Amino acid sequence: MLFKLIKLLLFFILAIIVFKIENTDSITNTINYKYHQHSNNTYSNTKNKMKSWRNMAIDLIKEEQAREDYRNNNFTIIDGSNKNDSSQQQQQQQQAIVEAPLYTKLKRQYSRYYRFKVKDTINHQYLMNYFIQTEFDKDTMDFIMETPRWNFVSNAANWIMSWMYTKTDIMGFIGKGNMMCLSTYQYKQILKINRTLPTIKFDEEDDNDQDPLKVYYESLLDIGAGCGSTTLSMKPLFKNVTATEASKGMIYSLNKKGIDSVFCLDLETCDQLKNKQYDIVSCLNVLDRCEKPISLLNTIKKFLKPNGKLILAVVFPFNPYVEFGGIDNSPIETINLDQETLSEYVDSFNKQVFIPNNFEIDSFTVGPYISEGDALYQNYVLTDVIFVLKVKNEDHSNNKISNDLMSCD
Image (cartoon, rainbow, N blue to C red; front, top):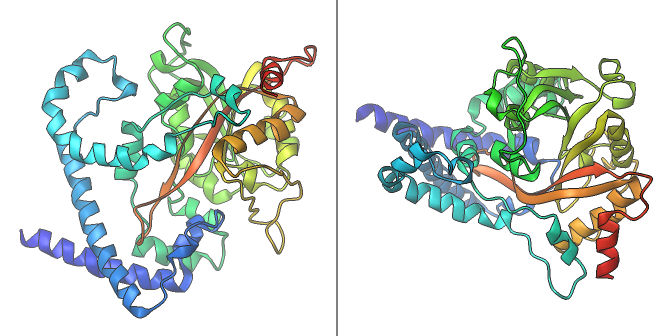
């Protein structure tokens, strides 16, 4: 009991110290500087700051207690990803008492990020032909519960290393920058993987040590993989996985996770990827962070096998920010989109970006793009749109989506 009281006291002291550090050179900005989010989190006076300290400490204490309960109970959530497991179904009644309060609460909080609606008055109805509904699941909950916030140690390391490295490099070296886009099961959904699709068998010496029954594709190229947390969600579906990064810190993080990585500043000139093609290329939340997003999309085509697919994730709304993009951090190539609503955003991406560059939508979904938290917030969350795209056959001038568009006009 005494140990627990000391632990809670240390959490309270740590929360205050971290908050003070973040007011000088905020690690919140380190994580979220490129998204221009949470600008309203600046407090106007000392009273509000003191209130935030108390709330912050209470939140940390509650979060740690919830995390301990989550680990100690070690229960299995019954969701779409495991609904066919009869043994788990048998445990459902026993686990309901444990899982209901926490899981139900988080599922309710995150449900709005999975919603996609099209107004009848707008000619976006064709999009529903490609929309795949996903929902909050256990992998998402695991990320929220098990991913630690930035703390005093990581903040101090960031401050010291900032004299020598970029913000992205620092996050890679100290094991931060964790993000979640979709779970493994959700990737299976948008790739339309089901039990009728044959699996790939491989020898034990292959680099993917996942269950062979879950492997459906030969190869994946993950462009701009970051620290590799999103890559790990896709890895079970592939025999071979290669990740690229322009940050040496993130390359270090990828290697620590056992992901085959390539340091690459430009796909066009990357010798290690020369003449290679992949079943799937993923480009998750990179398009709004690069200088030439349209050129990147067209370069990706060269790395796709015939009938290959591109998994493209973009944050809504689209706010380009290039870390080394000059004074105003603007890209060289601009993308102009209508993004008053989510359906306008998806429709605009299709008409302004995909179709002119010879891509067509195979499927898409929406969900939360979650990053690790700091002293103020357990997590930072943005709305993400995840597309699965195919390269159009140039011999067919009227493809399926074009016909759908014409029928809506």
